[in-house]
Length: 328
Image 1 (tube, helix red, strand yellow):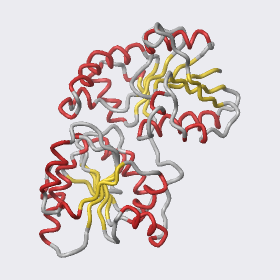
Image 2 (cartoon, one colour):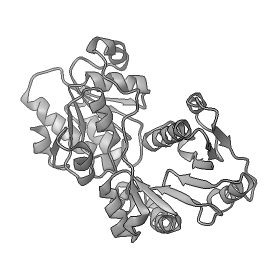
Image 3 (cartoon, rainbow, N blue to C red):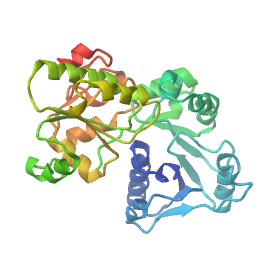
Image 4 (tube, one colour):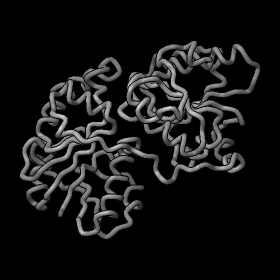
C-alpha cells in the first residue's frame, strides 16, 4: 500500500504535533516494511527531518506547486494523491482534503479552538469553526489521543463513535533519566541552578502560565531559597500580558525563559528539575508530563479530564486556576 502523511507539521521547528507526525511516519514504516510511506508537504522540511529516516520505505516528498495548485488542500494535494496513486492519506494536524479518490484518516488532537476560543487568535478560531466540522465529516476515520477527546468529537462535531478511534501517545525513546551530574553543562549554559521548577511547552494562553507564575511568587514569599522557575518552549501567541506581568514581578530574577530547546537539553531539564508543573486549562493528551515522568520527574498537573485519563494517580493533580492549591 502507498500511504501519504501530511508533512506540514515538519516544516517548522518540531513541537508536539510535529513530533507526533515524524514518529508516526517512522514507526509505521518500520512496522509495515511492505508499505511505502510518503510524508508530503508543499513547504520545505526542517533540516533535522531527513536525518530521522532510517528505512528504505519512508520518503519525505516536497511537492512542487503552481499558481493553481498552491491552494494545497483543495487542489494541490488531491492532484498529488491522483498523480502518485496514493491509496490512503493521513492528515495528522486537523486537515484532510475534502475531495479525494482514496480513504482518509484524520487526527484531531483536541477541540481547543472550539471549546476555548479565548485562548486563540480570532482568525484561527474562525477558520476552525468553518473547516473542522467539514474535515471531520469528510474523513473516513478519525484518530484522537484520548477517550476524553473522542467523546468531545462525538458530542460537539456529531461524529459517530464508530468512526473515532483512540490511539494514545507516548514519550519518545530519547527521554530517559539522566544522573544529576550529567545535566550540569546544560543547566550552566542556560543559567539554571540546582533547584528549579520546570514547565515545558509552547507559551500561549491555554497553558495557564500566569497561574504558575503567581503560585511561584507565593512559594518564594514563604521560603528563603535559590529556587527558580524555568519555562522552556517557544513563544506562541497572545503572550504580552504574561511577559508584562513577569517583567514587573518581584520574582522576575528567578524566572528563566529558555526559548525552544533541543531534545538533549529537555532530557537534562526533565531529569534535574525539582518538580515538573503543567497547569494547562485544556489538553487533548498532555505529552510533556509523560516525557517528564519518563525522565523521573515528579509531576503536578491540572485536574482536567484528559490529564486525569493519561496521568491517573502518577501525578499530583490540582485545580487549573486555583493559585493557592498549586502553591501548596
